[in-house]
Image: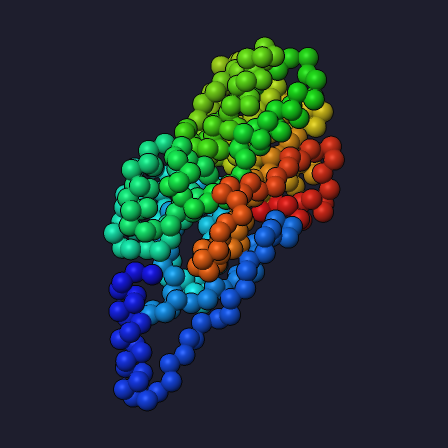
Length: 346
């Protein structure tokens, strides 16, 4: 606890004594968060025991732009619903898709003496210096959603998806389609992000090993509009392709818009295989109706995991594990059910 909080607590106690009034903690009861949200939906908000002084745990949250994708919107909503004053937190949220801006936000949060810094990094590199500053200032860092290239001693815990595994699961599914030829449009996410690296790595490795043709490989930066433009340019060039591997659902949606405009069939038993990631509910419906072929899950509901870690740290407990990998799967249009759409769609 920082000195300013101790002083505040002593002053409050003295004031209560002077007026012979009883001082009480007005916070809600503390309960540990569920270790895993049921059906991949946000766990109900669990409050932690309020601190002395102002009664709130001060948190700085750095995330990617909420408008980046449906996944990110769900992730942001999950965090903002949990880290509230009613649940014992004084939380400030900052958003950017640029690493340098995020690092600037982190520096400001450290200056503001937050207790915890929650970070979903735009890029995996460049974080060592600011995280060293955080550690020196006594600010506890918790990573969520994305990993970074930094020594584990610089953060308390990491709650992440296994992006490499997501890519590998998708590529194994694609191998299993046993196509006569593989001519792939590869729509990448924001370059340097953990999601882009993991999902790209698996496809590029398979292409090198198996002789698949990458017809076009560009970043659409998670944007449906940019993805549509890229696919339209390939169509206009008369290049042959039969697979679109889009690293998120929004880019897959943009790609399909270009195909529809050109009257090119897509989905199960059609001319072009459509692959996405994130499992937006609307995307899983595209699988259910067999207009898409595959969607890889990426679980955005991480606040309950983070809150459980904060509760343990506040109670002086040792964390059981440094890295928590969220359980995720891939969905095939040939086997998906309405229950899958209801239970796993975000």
